Length: 359
Image 1 (cartoon, rainbow, N blue to C red):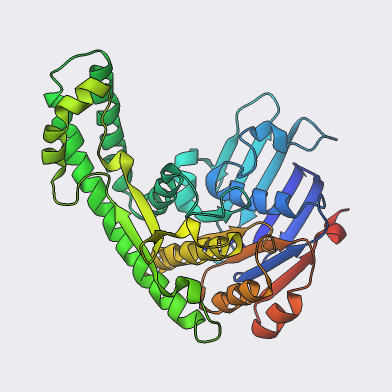
Image 2 (image 1 turned 135 degrees about the vertical axis):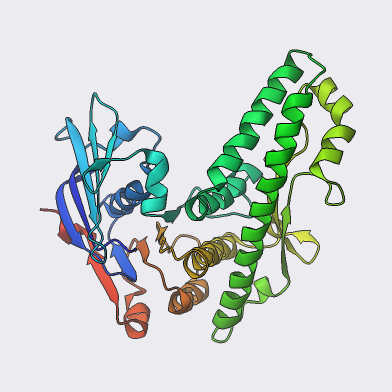
């Protein structure tokens, strides 16, 4: 469900802030350093227990009051409350409806995806990033997935430990690796296929108003991490000697990837940075539509600095795409130059001039 209200206390540059959000489209604008990203960061924190800017949670504490911060989000439809407290000398504490909740469960309570300047290009990102994005979406929607995921990676770790110790008999962990690995890959493939269907529909709808020639011939393929013509068991058996020589498991779901091509050429060699960013946004929107239409979830899409890399034409495509996004979208920009386009298209739209929020 969308976030209706967010409250910050001693968070980043804000000593105190209360905001009422739209369930659909929210736009924050202001000068660099005004706090746009901090607000988006706080909203993402309520989904993940983490910042998308810093691995050091203590760095989020306001420098004028260094004891700690509090972030609270409220869902007006369900009445659910998430409260996050971080004291300078204590671990982060997360409460969901006044009950202490581990970070691992938070993503299912209030799912969100953040796109920012360090992660906007899925095509140019390393495979590990694309796997994590896919797995996080599945983790949110499929409660059984965590058992399969941890089962595979636990087996992988144990098998690699034996290989590093030059122990040749890995049969016990091979069986566990294969069982969980086959299931893991099947779940990933199914979610990817559903995302592709939503992406095709989204591109078709947006293309009615804007030419998207750079996406016309795009080919997106899920690579499971081993030969498509083999079972995982056959692959592990065939590569056993090679794995022993390298002392690591060289093939399997831990090598999975999503590849993007224009024709037969890697998309990152053709697409501009702006086109890559727009595609990343459309891909996330498609994942969110899968979560909503198939799994009845309402994730929030957070986009920091939307203007960066997008020219007027690509920005127009983004604005058009908002017509087909049913979930909450929260994005920021350094100025207000796009507000006229957005205001004319949407009724449930809220705009915030961040400099005016400081008090």
